[in-house]
Length: 240
Image (cartoon, rainbow, N blue to C red; front, side, top):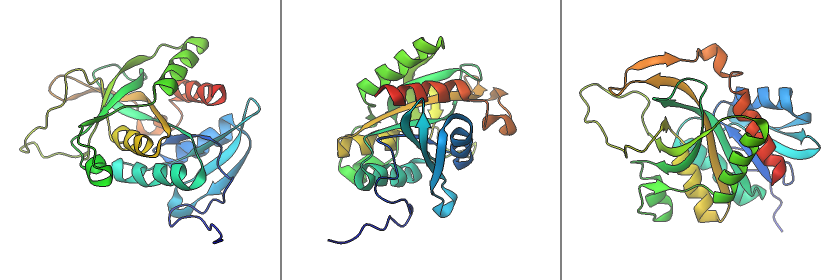
């Protein structure tokens, strides 16, 4: 039997990850979560700077790992966690743009995208992917338990952060309440591999109907300004 020696992107050994992993985009946010919220946290990966930790929260084992920016990046890291490391549940925790004010917390009910990721990887033709209902219900219940308000609605996962003013504008459903770059890919992986995924995000940038920024959390504050969202995700993790 061939010994498992990790992947090209993850040096963790089998058993290093808990069954539930929280995944922020920023690996430094993963470090912040491990150092601030977890007990006995140990580093299990640092290849490519994509920090990952496993520790305990209120006595239950939980892991946290960065996933980088965009569908291709979250696609790689989440696929490997599901496929090779036995992870059952991934909760993406991140930031988004929205017409809602900064610090608003959103639980994604769908992930829309113009990306070809799901079609090329798995043959899925839909332009949206769904999270796991049980995980979403658990996130909402955890928020209520903590006395925190969350909005539930569709997210749109874009492939581009910078877009030329003269470029044709891509349309997305009017029901979308948050713009981010990853949920579609994560949900597609979970669907294909028979696993569970959810996405909870904090509004970091507010914009008007024309896409002009009206308010934002400073880059320095983003690493630590999302603790309500983090606590909701952690309470969810230990409830599973």
